[in-house]
Image 1 (cartoon, one colour):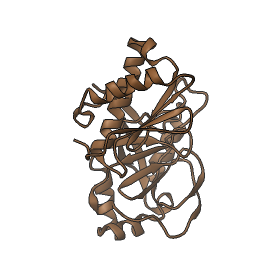
Image 2 (image 1 turned 135 degrees about the vertical axis):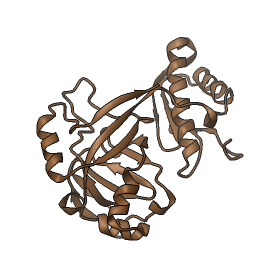
Image 3 (image 1 turned 120 degrees about the vertical axis):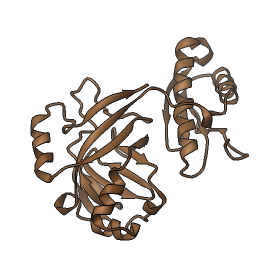
Length: 249
């Protein structure tokens, strides 16, 4: 169950609602947001008249945006009824994909691995083992097209952001802070520590599916050498950098 004042629906500007499940990073609330958003999309297909005016939905770390146009009373009632129909934290996640993504850790591909490992209280080799031991969930997409926030990592990785800013990390950089990974979909500055690099293209405009990942997908990082990563990049025309994918029903 969520806290006493969650979930709740908040008006967001003049054309949106925010269905909020939490006000902090929380695994159950993220699962609830993903499950609720999937249920809204199913309901829109099954009873479009009840959701007339709703133009799009999107989930974040712990909430769901519902954007509408025109009269909001009907779809707001539908959203409220659906919200009250289940304990969304106990609902299964919708069918999703498991991505295994090659990643080169340390060295020039992960220049802050040692610093991050020290903050987590482990050696570099132990850090790599810990960060690749199990899959992490795509909690949300944001900041740049297709760019995922991934987690939730074990408590040891509740490490702070940097006090300064790294002027630029490359596309494919894997950075870590506050029990999350971010996999960079573009070259950009960051306040998080770069521990590795992939050749995974989060966004490729020419692909059938330009944004590769979806909230709820699982990702597991497979440690490889820097040379193997470059070879995977050269040999994979899809832009997925040698990643493999399977379905989770």
